[in-house]
Length: 490
Image (cartoon, rainbow, N blue to C red; front, side, top):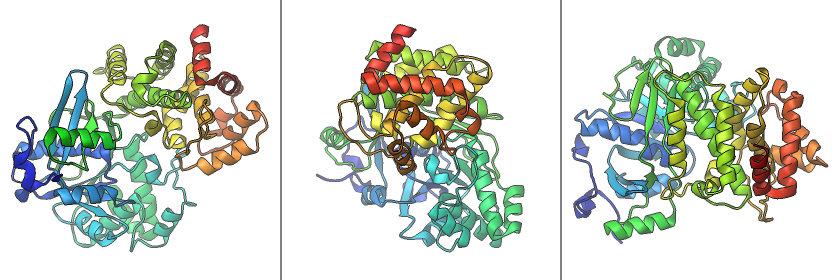
């Protein structure tokens, strides 16, 4: 079948929206590190809106820091792709034209550095997942034992990490007399701008203290909060879209209608006039905490308990009444640890989240959400647990979610089916479980991983007791049985 491309845009059905601007006239104003489905369904759409509104400065050159897969899907299509927005009422298709090129960084690091250092580049955005920042999730310090980061500490001639590329590109800009770009983390990392800035400055100091001072004085690393549910694209999705459009799109993405991007209004250069879905604010942290602890925290609980139960999709997990009880109870617990902004009504937000989770057309896979749990637990579940313990409050729902993660690390579901634990600390957690003889020993061994569990929290008797109880219930009765036990206890 013919592929989507600039030459085939005119052949698309009339109901498919397509770029209404001249892509040839677009300048590259944005470099994105870590192009994947989320960026294509979120930030790229925002910049596409800016281009459509007449500001041609915001084309995107994107980079994969690892695999060539996205490049190989997008470049043959002139970097065009379809965003399919799905809800219960149907679906709407829109072709996004903001991405101009995709670079595979390990193949051509010079090409990526050149565009990051170009005069027209004003913003660098990142979706490299929590592990891509090379920061200890508990302390925020650089993980100097990481092989890629260690190589960047030695030399930035061929960077291997996102902070390495940013430091090397900013060094070139300084040497050329250019101002720095604004670097915007778009990952679910607490205080993501502060952490990215700290990683960049520390790496810069290792190479040139004067460069670090220049970045600190003139650069900008806004805090941000991003929100949109973007399930992984399947072969069935690609085939169904091809049947609808008569043209194949190997780079398509699907998403829910909801989109939100809250950005701290801290830029060191030009920025677009942002449109719908973007909110500039002086303080992102309250928005970020609410999203991490309510949306993402519930997602993690759903992913591990549902995945252990052999349930493939989020909406199918929530078809179980006992799962809905757990999610509401987890929200009750986490909500007490928040300081929401005046614009955010938590009761309304919770109702909207449940409706988003219930969307059956998204088919959001539990195993997709379960990835990289060691990097996600501290901000999603452990932070509210610590806050509630300090206040003398119960943590049963949150503890059940953490216990489910502990069980997940074993690599077996309740049906005895093996799966790969996709996590940067998978070898560490496997070793902890291998040397533990019973439930309490497994809890104690995993609690000893300080990069996940801060010692003060790991030493809490109440936390340990709750984990031993719920991990024991999961091991004995399975995830569904533990959920039923929780519902009865409520």
